[in-house]
Length: 601
Image: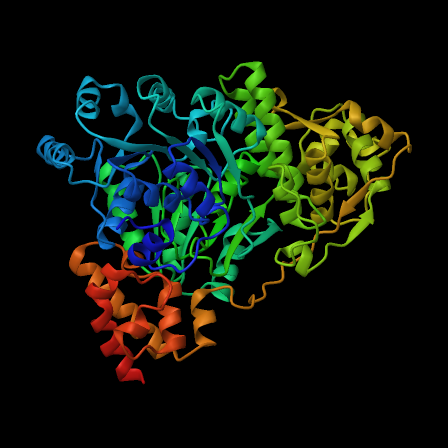
């Protein structure tokens, strides 16, 4: 008897019900129709093509951008009893031939393949000899040149529509603004495809953005207060900063590893493998690390530098809490981040049209940082989503931001920029406003400026905050030909003339670190049962994973272990009722976990 999507969901994957639009997408694809799926990270995109591949005749071919993602997906499917394999550059010729033999013999349900292989004659011959159930294009935003993760080899994916017009295709992404969505549809020939849009909200993630004081110390305080013993990712802009931050965290008792493109491939793979296998390791990385990281129990993502766009921020923070449990997206942000990124854009080899787009994206990112209302509403509105009420799970909701009338301070700052010749950076301008008779100020004669010493109402930190917000609001521009000097923009005129009131964000100093309720998995678990039981379950999972050299979460997710703690199953029948335990995993691991649970009963 042919299984239904719901039966496959339960028997293979161990879940009782679909989430959101999953069932509609699956039924649409099983019927042989094309689809574009926009679904948040952790929303269950993979099931949208994995189940149809199992139900349709033939093999499901998945185009995936990263080797790590393929390996992770295949490991997870093999644990479920699904016949899956991949073809990519990490394999020897004999390994690749073995997969091809499986494919030709009709032994595979799913094949993951790198996009660059689509244009080879070998792949064309292979596809010509097999029955293909569907094509799934994962991380579809990589095809867009206006997206934040453009991959030139993804352009070859457009060939699928021309060469295999009768085979259904599904393109999936978690990160695409309207322009990127339009380009995905155009490049992949999906004009007739049904678009399934599930929204971008990740309600389990708590968004927090703090003003930089001492970013490393702020990070350490955050980790110790809220995420002791948790797995997480810390993003830095430069390779040098990655190395230094990882070393510093280790010196302060937090196990951390670096990851960046300047490392050898073997070392990167070794560090990534350790991260996937560990329950409590911190990866400090550039953006070279991340896309395709399927680890569900990443409890936090921290940024020590400002991302280039809202898309990048959403994609990177989305690696936290893929299991649906509470997680945190934390970032320390300051004026120097803005200056650095704008300088990088100014010096890039991009054409002017591209630069304008990138400046626009950066401005949107700055607006999110300086937001005084609900951050989640601002984040979602960027992607065209509407959240009717404030989320109650971001810093600006939990601790409402105070604002103040900064009109006079802004006029003083703008006037100081103008009267000093628009040739100086923030540090020097603050010295002038505070009336500091430094050697440089005296040598330039600026103690005679009308703005000298007029800023005593604020201290130096407050003045840095004012200048940061003026830059973020576009009232002041950074001149990189003049070593970061500030100059006025046309938008500053109404402020200088007193025609417009300017409300500014009142920064809190120092940042208040509070343990969020259930922010970490371990904290949530301790409220459910004893720490000893939790650690025993994790140890059993780790033992089973190590014997197979797979990540622990491939055996069971944290949420499944927590359900075991809550329900204390006494039989295999009881255990089969727990979400995330399908027939194959029940047969493989059921008895081992039942024996452990009995010890704690």
